[in-house]
Length: 330
Image (tube, one colour):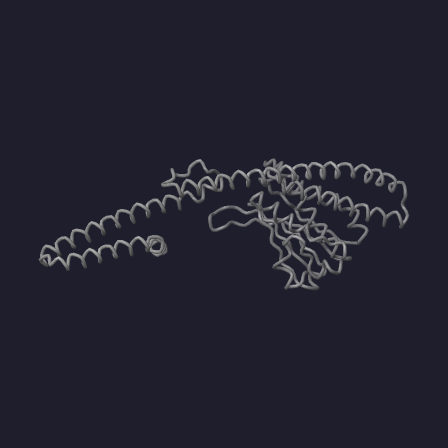
């Protein structure tokens, strides 16, 4: 319907011109007193020819319109498949498109080059900052008083933020260093727990670790990062409580086994109005406003990584009761 309206709008002046000429011809023939039968026959032939030409032109343009409509999705990638122009107007428009396409590709290339340079510099900076962090860790290892313990905790936070920044750069890149293979889930969980063992002791948090014997198809390094982020949040918002880690295996309607790792804490919980938005980039919610150092990047990265690995992460929580994080590994 839209094409018909546009066609009539584009060709209205020519249709009116032909009808006007036909009317003038009829008027002149009337003055010549041509017999009605002959006049009617001539009028019928002219009108039939006129209608035939309009139908042929309409069909030709409609088919050309559908062809161009089909090519619309391909223009974003390449213009090589554009059909040959019909007339000077289409030629001019295609040249204009090519000029815009070339300019756009140049701008995209410049932007990508700039992003690559920025990412390379940032990655180099992250690796360089790890050297003084390691040196400070060695210096603090020589002290065992309360002040040094507080300094170690702050240094650990710095190290985590640096690692988060590095992973954010990597996951945002066009290509990632995923190495997919069979991984023992218990091994990944224990390595993450070992990293936070000192904080468990310092914050007097009880750990309940149930046996985990699942083999999962995933990237060990990236999955460990996700588990670390979840543990970090659990420790941050659980004071003197309990963190439980256990597995659950379910079968979907497609008879496909889903291995689920659950990390549950008895912390302060998440407000109901915050739950729908906790995976948004930069969203901190009520808890994040209470903790001024919260960045709102951790859970965003977790969901992005999990989905790139064809996994899923969901969270259920209740204020004053705790939070339960489900890591579904399909």
